[in-house]
Image (cartoon, rainbow, N blue to C red; front, side, top):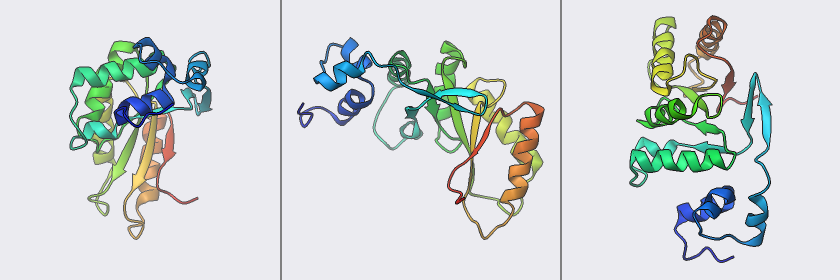
Length: 189
């Protein structure tokens, strides 16, 4: 199919979420129509069953095109109906966690699974347990969940060697029940 005259967002939705596209009557090429009957595969991460296709919400940070909150939530709902249960966001994505949190509250965190990031860019030499705890608690409030299902830990400057200490604080919060699963992003293994 020729998607050259279709807006980028519509083309990407067609490529990744054929059922949502079909329910809006936009049509789809045969391969995508066949995908409409194929469930999105899931995988086990820690204690979560997440969709292997993850809908990211970086664009909700602002400066990446215009949207309304209602449009963003309708888009999340269409993806969820199509089997995309996993929502990616971050503490640094502006209002993204708030918008995702409203959606998660309306659908339930067992159906719509918010996965967020804990990003450390500033105060790397002085970040402590009080700050980490406060930030994680704020993320729980914004996402409207009692605990964060999955947190990907991001550290900006490897010359500041405190990332192990901060990871241990995150692990302590996991043991206390504020975090369910911890992952890493931007760390070489």
